[in-house]
Amino acid sequence: MRSLLQSSVFAATLLGASLAFGQSRESRREFDALLRSAVQHYEAGQAREAIVELERAYAIRPLPRLLYNLGRAHERAGSFSVAADYYRRFLQTNPDSEAGAIAREAMASAQRRAAEAQQAEQARQAAAQTSEQRALEVARVQTAEAERQRAEDERRRLLATASVHRRFTIPVMVTSGVAVAAAVAGGVLGGLAFSAQADFNASHEGSNRAASYDRGESMALGADIAFGSALVAGVVAVVLYFTQSPAADPAP
Figure (tube, rainbow, N blue to C red):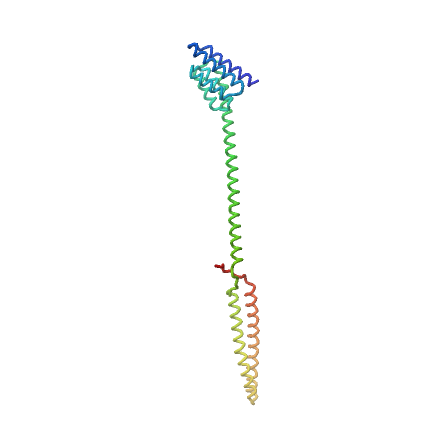
């Protein structure tokens, strides 16, 4: 019903424009033909073609009513802001009260629909930008993961082609040094114990024999403790050496 009403108003205003025309017969025929063609295109839903015909007619005779019809055609074509501008230009020609009321109502409707279309376009652009940003973030994550995987593959390749060896770390060296020092100390104390035993065997006096015995016993005990410490430290050094993570030198 609204479409039929718009078409009726459209055709009526064009008819008024044609009747108000007063130039040569040839120009009038061309003008009338353009108006009839514009009405046919408009009623057939071919708004763009109607706009072309109306613009050509307006170039022949710039009548105010054609501005209103151009607004209608642009509104049907979806160009609401352009339609509102044509309605505004029509109102600036000071039409009668009835035509002015119709034009003002049409202009308000076109402005409202233009604002709605602008909001819809802004929402569409925002959604497209958000979707593009998400796609970019996904691409960045995928790129970073691919780089990490390539680095991991390269590390594994180097490890596979590298010479692996074990290193003397500080704990290994410390425990090895303790083992060596304890072994040396045990050897010295053991030698002193043997010397005390020789003195004990060579002495015939009771006091000298007792002193040699006590000294030899103390040295023997110290040697046992030193050798035991050397054994423990040596075992710890061996365990540390074989349980450490091996180091790899990249192959040439």
